Image 1: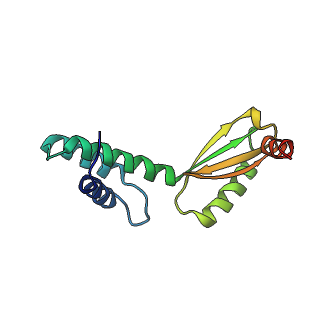
Image 2: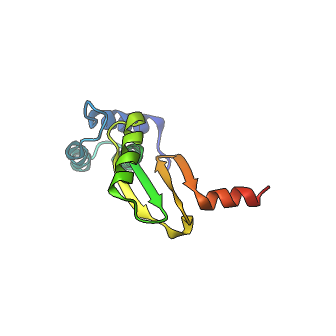
Length: 129
């Protein structure tokens, strides 16, 4: 489905209405906005809902740090990582995953940004030389 720029602009404005002063999404407002769109059914409401949901999903990704490590991190390691990330990014939520294929080290992903400090990536870089 092709979504017009007008509909995308409307969805972007609705998303801005759902942001709290600290930049985080107010999930109650997101639910209320999507329910209002569904009930009132304005012109192109399906495209508006799709676009709005896409913007909400992207906004959530911007505020979620996914940390993958080869082994379970200790609480002090987690606190150190959170302190470093919170210095650059405000209001992050954290998701901790274990991925043994990394061999050692960790990767951090925030939206499209990836910080890769894993042994697996270092070995792959060396094998390309």
